Amino acid sequence: MKLDQIRRRVGQMFIVGFQGTTVTDDLKKLIQDYYIGGVILFRPNLESPQKIAELTNEIQSLSKTPLFVSIDQEPGQIKRLQEPFTYFCSPTELARTGSPKISFDVGYAMAREMRAVGINYDFAPVVDVNTNPQNPIIGKRAFGSDPEEVAKIATAFARGLQRGGVIACAKHFPGHGDTQKDSHKELPYVKETVEQLKSREWIPFSQCIKGGIETVMTAHIMNENIDPEFPATLSKKTLDYLRGELRFSKAIVTDDLEMKAIIDNYSIEDACMKAVGAGCDFLLICQTLVNQVKGIETILRAVLDLKIPVTRIEESSERITKIRNRYLVPFVPVDPSKIEEVVACEEHKQLAGQFKPRDE
Image (cartoon, rainbow, N blue to C red):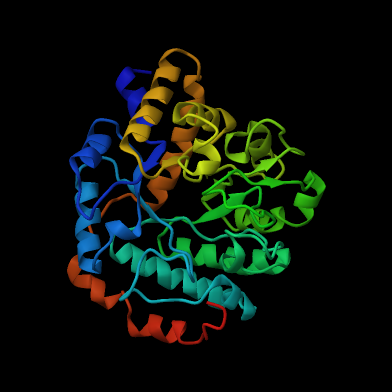
């Protein structure tokens, strides 16, 4: 494989965040010189729907290959897109309906609004089972504490997203529901055995996988019963269960590698190397340009030095390409004149109006 091909395939594995509401010189360099696979949008990047569409169109114009434009847009409290985008209830409230159809409809409506402004990848749904009332990170983001109910409603939501043209992501494997610490701030430890995980945490993941979900996100948690050495994101032992036991053959994405659970314990270079070695296909680095560049160059250098087999990069490239071809090709820029027909349309308002925000 030629050097340029290797550079492009390595770059495609990275999804990065950036500062501001317009394309910066730093972002332009990452797209054009490092061939990144995509970007993630946070609230500071976002203005009006029209401005978001202009931003995503400009981002896409810089790349010959359509980019993944991602976001954390869960129903309920974790929502980057504010008014006038339609507000839907929390997953807990959605699960109270007991209706996969309603959950599908909500996912589909959310996807239509995201696609209307150029967003094609949503890091949702949370499929963690809310088993620990003291969990500081999951709580109302979960669809509930019954794994079968979580599986039913979350799978329908994911199918709705993908039917609407937005790639879905089941998170956070192998299960973040029973932690007492926030992995944004420190590394949580859990103690479930594999048998316990099979009987509870992995049920929703399994159903989402059977339902055709395209991606699964890892958790920055430590479970010494699976791997006493590395947290899940960096653990081949853990991700082998996802590939083997749950038979997931599509793309695995890391949670943000700059979260303190990782970055306080590993250099960004080491974290990227271990994540690729563990089997991750997308590496998410949300904040710092220097870390983004270090991460990409570290993996590229490792491939050239034969520390990472080219075949390992080709595996990820194949998974990423299949998803891109299914959802992003052929690429069509957003038409800003069509946004008002979709965002906060009457149909979506009526759907959202079925729910009372009792638990928000």
